[in-house]
Structure formats: structure tokens, C-alpha cells
Amino acid sequence: MQDIVETQESITDLFQKISDIKAKASQSEKMVQEICADIKKLDYAKNHLQTSITSLNRLQMLINAVAQLEVTAAATSIHSTHLNHHDT
Image 1 (cartoon, rainbow, N blue to C red):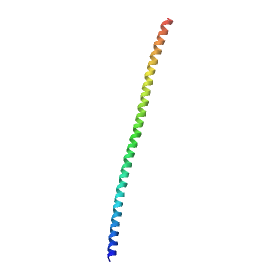
Image 2 (tube, rainbow, N blue to C red):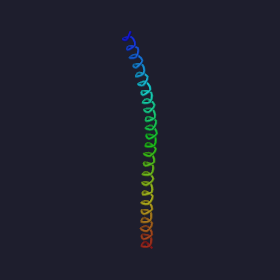
Image 3 (cartoon, helix red, strand yellow):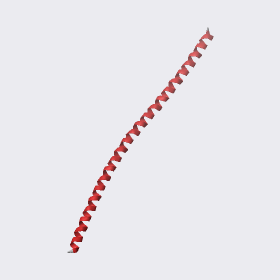
Image 4 (tube, helix red, strand yellow):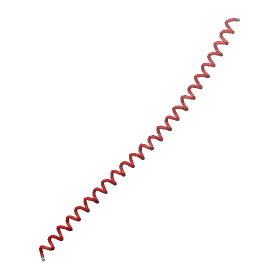
């Protein structure tokens, strides 16, 4: 009879351990899902940041190109005016 009681206690203990493992597994799964959601948000932010940096770099190149064109146009205008004065 003692063996049956010990076996029943062992089975009860085993079921409790299984229940604890399931609860911990569920918590771990929830934590993994939250981490994945955070990673996804960070990945979106990284992509937006990269796009913004690229846009700002292109804007800087455009500003530099316009400035260079202004310098070239001014130099051409001065050169053209200088030539016109010599022709007359």
C-alpha cells in the first residue's frame, strides 16, 4: 500500500513539474514575441533613418552642385563681360 501512495505522490509531483514547465515555456514564448516585436520596430526605425540619411546626403550634393553652378555662372558672366568690353 505504501508503494501505491508513493507512486501517486510521485505522479502528482511529476504533473506539477510538467505544469510549471508549461507555464515557464508560455512565459518564454511571450517574451520572445515581445523581443521580436521590438526588433521589428527597431528595424523599421533603422530603415527610415537610412532613408533620411540618404536623402540628406543627396540634398547636400544638390546644394553643392547649385553652389558650383552659381560660381561657374558668375565666372562665365564676368569673363563674357570682360570679352565684350575688349571688343568695343
